[in-house]
Length: 182
Image 1 (spheres, rainbow, N blue to C red):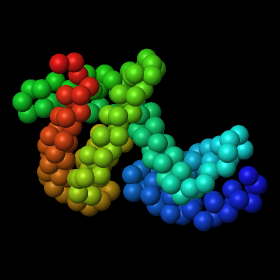
Image 2: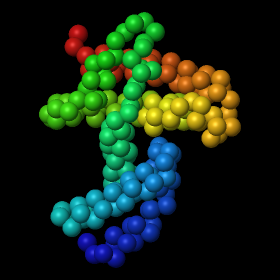
Image 3: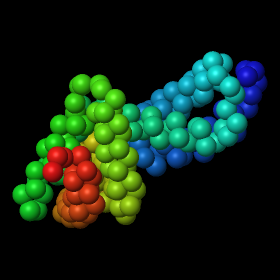
């Protein structure tokens, strides 16, 4: 693959890809880093292997994987909201799996499945609920900081987060059943 075709793909897809990533990653610099990583990976794959035929599909899949990776790398993902289920169901096995340092094919596959389910569940939330959950649980911001930044009342943000947590608990119970031994 020539440098011109990589440059062409970059100019054709960069803005749309950045918009896609920004809808899932709140910090602009992080989103731009992901775009850069995706296009670097795209260039490397085209150098080393058969040229990619479906460029757009490949780029979006790579971006999605990088977004998931960026969530995984965040050390401050407390998932405290998920750990306190209404029926005292313990989801600590899921949390242990997500923070596991052991890189076996089995743990990698399970972790990838769990992250895909989390991302899918987050995508099902209304935007305001998704935003508050991601900002507090994944980005480590306090509700007070978010209130000051957005001008939305703290109680409104807390309510949105409550509904998000309630939905995610229900939605992720299936994953909990698949990950934990019977």
